[in-house]
Length: 145
Image (cartoon, rainbow, N blue to C red):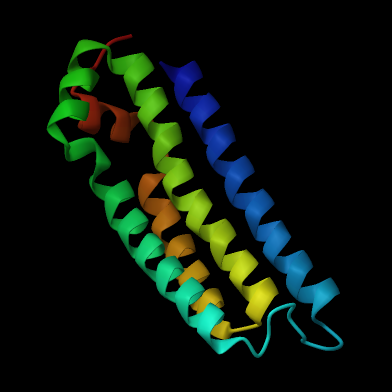
């Protein structure tokens, strides 16, 4: 059990650090001198993209926090706690990783600070899914090893 929790921690930190580094690199090296995005000035496209990213971000934040309360997942966690927890934890991390990447891309394309704010909302959600042994026990009910 401890080995699987450690693997999840490595995945968690690798994802979080790599995407944050990408965001910092985009801001510092691409837009430090002249903040010009590739699609700046295309308001209709920006509105559609921003609307989609807001909806995806908010639904993924809520979904990642409520994921382990779905009946099908709870049943699977009780039948095979170790393997199911690892699988669903990776999916939970990916549910925050994808919108975070979309926010970075939105900022690169449109240089709109609202994408930064959405990214901060996602970053604030990340600590609530940090994989620990206590969270594993609470979400699966499995005490084991």
